[in-house]
Image (cartoon, rainbow, N blue to C red; front, side, top):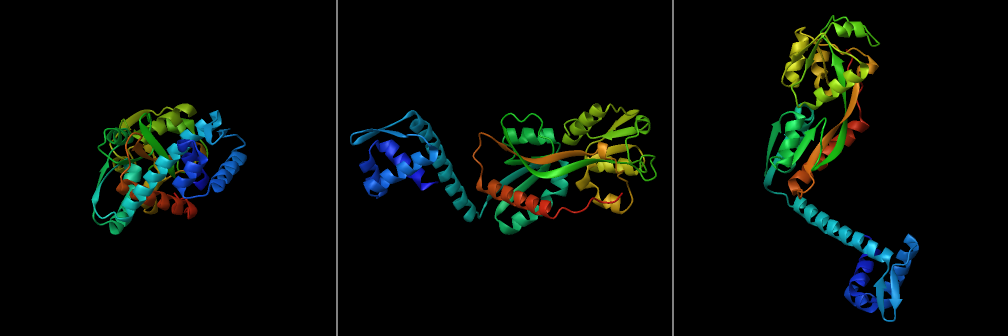
Length: 305
């Protein structure tokens, strides 16, 4: 915390420059100088001088409230960082929707366990709605989803970019299209994830905004089932670009390059607003953010369909 705020808090509490100076092991002129500099920086008067005593002004009372909160957060940060430095054992319960759970977190989890082998980690993979519920119910310390939906009671932190794209079987009429072809789409079977899927929410909203309605809908649980159904020729689907690299490489599915049918989103980390984060969860989140920053700096080209 800015040392001038520390001096300000001492004066505000003692309502006396000399007594605050004694508490801080400073001279009284040094304390007065810190307060003058703080008042000059903020452009307000913080104290009324009443002889040897002082009294907070309205601006001073506002700053005192913020200074106390900063002090609490600083102490909490110091404590958590000390815990992380000695993180030898503990538990970490993770929840994730399919895209981050299958295609992003495993490598990060391996690095985390190599760094903190004494921490026992569990990872539950389900749809976004269920992950949010698990975090709210304290069944998970951290959640990672593609669409948080209603986030009351949750702290939502975007950590990585993602793109939902159209996939079709090889030889499908949409493969050669470079612009939206409503008539082709109208005769297609659309394969959707189960209710509660963040991907499904985004796809349905996007298609509604384009005025597109498929001939029929097939609902399947999980993106792996969706990919296999598309590869088998049962229909078309939207899925995260992160999930299809191998299938594209082996020619099992195709991803038509139609810009209007691409959906951009952020992957988000979820925590409870009213819960104190554990050292293990903060350490894992730090690794996730580091990985996301590295991936963004070294963003690979899109796979060729």
